Length: 235
Image (cartoon, rainbow, N blue to C red; front, top):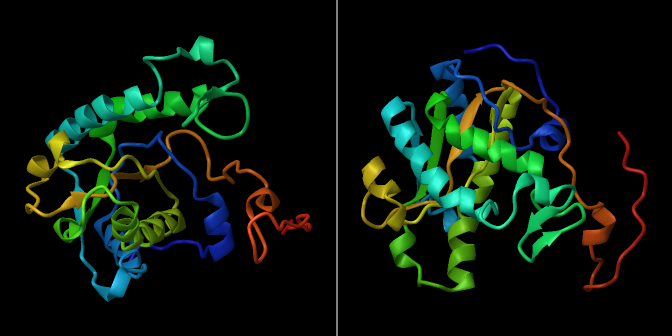
């Protein structure tokens, strides 16, 4: 097994952030097995374990995934609405272009483009798949939450385990059957790709804490609206 420096769990959590600039250097297969084994220790509703994990290393398949990624994601990140220059210091949010700390800024968006243009060069892409999608009722929040809740904890496990080996990752878009991803990966009829997780050693950037709204702004005690001042959390 590959050697690695021990990493405190809180340090791993605080420094596992989206990494989109990844080297093409191969990831040792024994490291991949350890990362995947950590992933399946994650929570799964009713212990059904209705998941599958497609590990993609074929350059031709990665190239096709890059095309799908570009078509689906770049429009969602607002290029049709506003250029980098027009965006300035603002961010693209679900409500439109707004100032503040929430949403996608121009730097983040450039990272999205870089990844889309270099998907074939990323050494590994992991596609987490739920095989029980056909059993869920369509277009309900409860069904979507149930499907996601049975795998997204495992996705975070995968990304934290990758961080333990100094491997960067990012959780990208869910892709429905209309995208062509199911045929590309040869998935069974009732399967649904819940995300695509590129893995690779860092080409640019570093492992650091992601910017988030202060915890005191989003935590409520006993009832919604009951909030408290945040204590000193420096470690």
